[in-house]
Length: 212
Image (cartoon, rainbow, N blue to C red; front, top):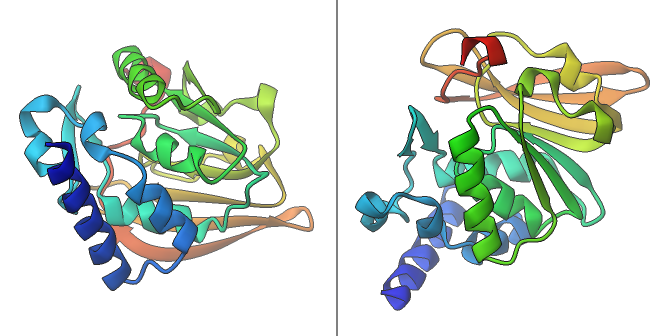
């Protein structure tokens, strides 16, 4: 079974390369991360398809291409400290853990946070810290961050998160009010922020703690 998953992951990475992902460190991180461990057993045969998959509680594990794209756009460095908003399955955090020094991840749903911790522990990931909380507030105690990655869609860019970026830092976030959103890259430079619209995506909505 493991050999089958290895072959499928090899093919997935080759497909992502064909779709334009060029950062070798990002591709290596995806190849070394067993996506099937972050997917419910009942649908593990679909783990290495380039699709989002349901993980329960009306949440999904993101499409591998989107995971790779968002990670690549941030231009991460080994010493970076990254905030992830929306732990979900833990798959994105596992990818990030191979590329940066520390990942701080916030999940609003405690059952998902617990499941993600177990999956990361099974892979001996020791540089990801997960807490349950309202992603709109970020994690100010650990700020500022070199990069912030948001894996649920707010209707507007949360200013509290922008404020937690380092000078020169980047944030990538899907923004939109309907089923279709746009990925937006925000760069903090000289005390101001620049925004760049990238590609259309579909993410679950980002909710406040009071809405959960």
